Image (cartoon, rainbow, N blue to C red; front, side):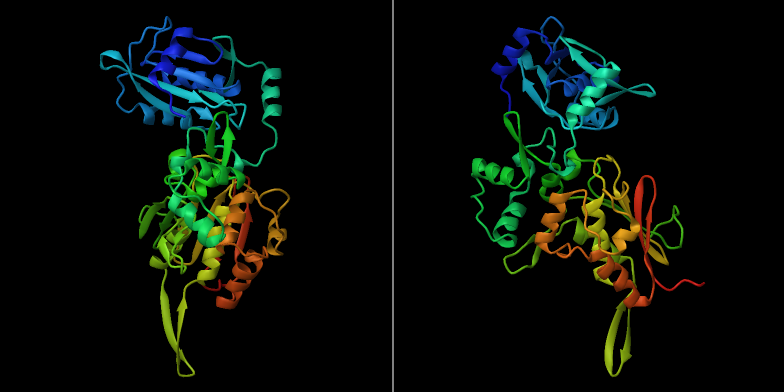
Length: 411
């Protein structure tokens, strides 16, 4: 809900309180991070830039204000967040900036970077101060254990979702009713009921899964959304590359009614990257031409989809890594395996997921094996059938790596 000048004037007139902070345009990033942290750890509120402590409006001059604030929230707040930012025209050609913090910020406690330390701040009246150990513990308890993929993405709205993709999903994939494009209220009701959006205060806000799956520009709000793809000429990481790109956009593609792709998602773009940077050969067998690729596409697709569906999205500013070498392909997912899953259990097809809604939507599209046997049947069995190799599944402290080999390795 956009604020108008009259509403902002009323807030300014009432002065600073536990949910309102005035700051000059020249506030330092550390100071702004402190105020955002404190309000996020309480019940939200507003930081109004371009207003003096006494309520007089001096305005803001910074031309890249929104980008500047987003960078502070990404780099100086842990976990990172994106608040709702509005530029409000004022008298005498002045502008003020209103930063709105939602009242149910999902990942409390939020910490602000103070030099080399990360500090939790809380709000007492109009003062932001460092939290006591007991207060910080209560914030951890208050955050609860909630699925991250259905948490709200602060600062985002219905307009940040791609309604063409959503119409395609409900009409053609799920084969159910979907509202007319201009009926925002009915869309919000449908999307809240399917966990693609969630009610937060007086706003309906896309969830993490909704933004990743159907967002127009997911990376604007979720810096960790995407795949960093690099093809190397040799067997090691090197400055010299064949191709390097960052794959951004919504996860899923948009299809026509007869199932033709009209607009690709990051799954298809990742597979296209592999196609461009691997080889295909042909040979004649029993009078028939046989085409053979370096890697079976079904195994590539399952590897990419598995990384997207199961990575830890709470690890911000870290993409999935897709690396092609002369002898192998590696896909590295940020975060350890979810829940009680181990490498050995994964090989047998054990079903567990970190991002339930993402997995279910990918299953609706047919990206995910409906039986939950994609790893043992499409990746492991698929690679053995293709060239007799055994894929490597490796978990370490911060990530999970799936490695496909082009050829059998020498013993």
